[in-house]
Length: 100
Image (cartoon, rainbow, N blue to C red; front, side, top):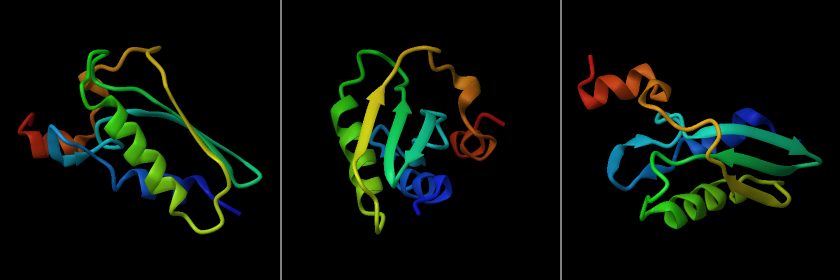
């Protein structure tokens, strides 16, 4: 059985190319993970609608989750509601970015 922890661990290996030291999880881009019979549905957002790296980030995230042993189908949906804000950035990422 695939767990949310496994999925989040996989997603925590995906980095925003513009901030290569910060993962998409640390940026607060993951809005939800649903697992049903080892099939995984991911809802994520991006920092801006016009992000030129959107397809790359989404494909990387999906690919990392597909590497989990026993995983079934993986679907990833980019959503815009609620809009992403810098408040979603984790405390550890804020420190890396020098926000504190």
